[in-house]
Every structure is written in C-alpha cells, then in structure tokens.
Image (cartoon, rainbow, N blue to C red; front, side):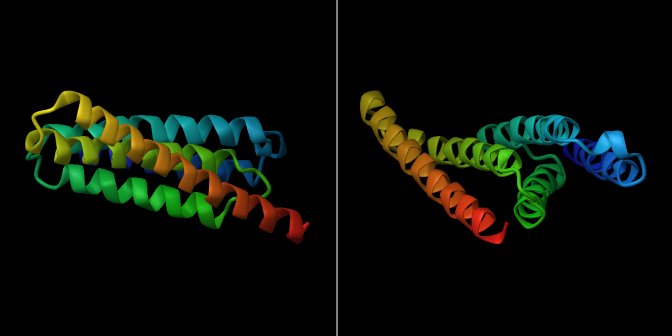
Length: 145
C-alpha cells in the first residue's frame, strides 16, 4: 500500500505543476494549496499508521516516510511567497514525530497520566520549533521582496 500511495502522490504533485506552467489560470494559490493538502494528508496518515502499527510491508512504509521527507524538502525549497505549504509540512512532521514518540514512550511507562503529560510537553516543543522556523522563513521572504 505504501509504494502505491507514494506513486499516486508524486504524480498528483508533479503533473498539475507541469500543466500550470502552461495554463495561466491554474497557477493561483488555491490549486497549489489544495494540492499540498491532498498530497500531504494521505501520506501523513499512512506514515503515522506505519509508525504506530509496526507494519512489515516490504519497504512501503519506508517509502512513505521518504516521500514525506521529499515533499517537505521540496516545499521548503520552492516555497515562493506563500507559507501555507511550509505550515502544512510542519503539521505533517509534527503528526509523524508525535506518533513515533507515543509509540516509543507508551510501552516503557505504566503511568498513563505521565505519558500524556510527556507527550503534551513534546507537542508544545514541536509546535514552538515549527513556529520559530515559520517566523524565520517569513522574515527571509519579507527581506527578499
């Protein structure tokens, strides 16, 4: 399942961008934002499921994580003047990292309240790091243009 979802996401990501370069009305922010959400959401859900369930799917889950990393990197590299893609990428990474932390912490701790408190602190730290990163990117966009 992971490899198929990765292939569909990559085609859905590349094809409209190639078409939008030739068709002017497809070049707006609405299409790009819809593509970001439509591409990141299924990959993020599948990556979280892979992390949580410990599935052995022949490399499909690793391909999902790699695709997520590739999409986040491409969004960071080709951000333009819109931070929506970066914010969506940060939210995807936060979801996957929090899932991985929960998977790592839960079996080793018997105290449910302590686990939730620890995950809450981790989540606050992840959100603070994402906010700082987005502020830095926004300043670099303002300085550039």
